[in-house]
Image 1 (tube, rainbow, N blue to C red):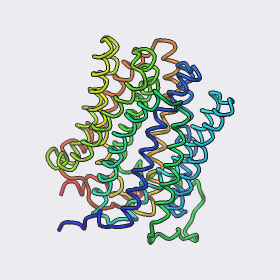
Image 2: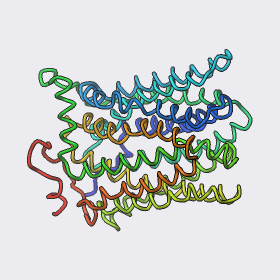
Image 3: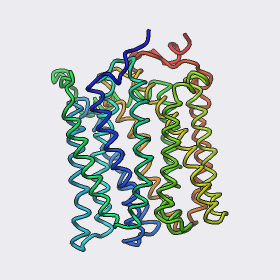
Length: 429
């Protein structure tokens, strides 16, 4: 029986619109912050490493308790609060710039606060979808939201790159701040049936955190995915932290080149989001996770190879790399996120997502600092070759797991990890 179309759910439409607008604004920040650091504040490799570490440090510092708190709170309210915090925080940069007081440490502080708000938003966001829509609609909802995000990413980087040639980077951050305000208003329009967790059922915060970690560790499929994602993120961050310096300074492709590269990457991501259901049906829902991880790692070699080519050719190679990698990342993410949401009991969704984020994003600030040190010591290109080797090795966790060769992933939540139930049994049916 075909599940009801999620696009007819007005509550989902408000969430859909809020996310799309917010992501469009984020694209301006993703270019404006590093561009501002490199061109206006003269940041070097180490400072870029610290900036990137600041933006992801919250996943390591507050990632686990955030999941326990989100499971206690109303998730839509958490997302609205996170949007408002991000809007106010971003607005500080243009004000400091106008006052002539902007320094690199201000960017570190803003990135850290933005990262903390994003932790709570992301944990709430992924935990909210199964509450807002029916279980059989979760996959369609994830595909729709990811596809829309990619549409926003297509327009955002190219427009931001063009605007950076005529206006200062801090001005672009105003647009992002406004987008968060609009997102908060749209989320406020949603009416859902979520109720706060029963206070009488609460345990101590450490016990609740431990329960979420035990669930992730006790589910073989989720554990394999978390291991691949965490190690892949670590090595990808080694390279991507230095990418703005690589493109703007070493390859001298300018802000427009950086914007074009990201825009084509977004096109690849959009096509990946749209193609995921058919690819999963054709290749197999479990197998496609392994294939996407391996293909993305192999194509990563194009980043360091671009350094051997003249400007037009190097840009073309980087564009091709971004396109394919974004395609594979979306296929991988949509499939594995849907799997996690299906397998996890509703009461553990926040802690499960927070535990995953702690492992897969918590490595990024460490990798960012290491990237800044390696970039300054052995060079950007050599650091990218190290990242390539590590990315290939990271695929082994899913490649040698039951996911490879699996035609159908589990379609219903399983028992908590404290039991002896495993995820392989439903997949064998």
